[in-house]
Structure formats: C-alpha cells, structure tokens
Length: 139
Image (tube, rainbow, N blue to C red):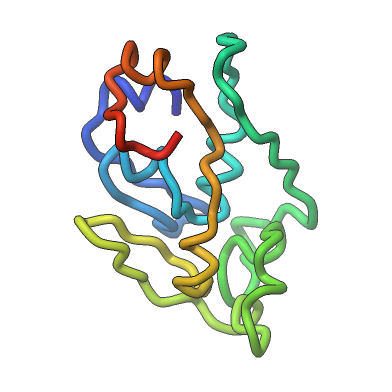
C-alpha cells in the first residue's frame, strides 16, 4: 500500500473476494476506513520517526476462502462488530455504503462510528507538506 499511494489514483481493497472499500488514494488513506483497510494501513512499514502510526493487531479466526463465514466477510476478525446491533455482521453481508465522492465501503458501521475514526497514519505538518498532503487533510 505504501507504493500504491504514490502510483495510483484509485484503490480497491478486497477481502475474501469482496470489494470491502474503494475510493481515491486520498480517501483510502484517511478515515473513515473499512476495518480491514484500517488494519492494512497499520501494517505498512514506515521508517520515518516523525510519522505516528497506530498498530492494529487483528484477532479472531482467519476464515477459509473455500468456506467463507456468513454475513460480513471480515466479521471473524473485526474489532468493531460489537458496535453493530442485532448480530448483523454475523448474519448478513453489508450493503455498499456510499461515503461521498465515489468512496464506498462494505460495512454495517454507523455514520457516527465512522465519523469518530482516527487516522492510522499521522504526518506532522512539515512532513505532510513535503509529501504533497494538503494542509487541511487529516493529520
């Protein structure tokens, strides 16, 4: 993903054959994220010590692609599923949620939960300017 950030205009994130998130590169690298995208971003190795990165450890069972779980394809590893009522994550595949500007996510999380997501990777203002990240981008 660290290379994708510099060479792609749009990104599609897949899990167990499902497109779980898609959008522009800037949309994928800034919250709100699909929980799998959030975990992928936290796995990017970054040597720059001025960059702050959250480390997310996935727990739960790794599902089989030959026998995928019911409901959301990521639900066996998702730390957010307890925030979704009525066990929807375990019983129904989520609808595509349109987040604006062509940014889409396959997730049951509410708009309130998505709005509270913190960036996985935070750049200081000097580093962001050097990398071409706009000043008003989430840091």
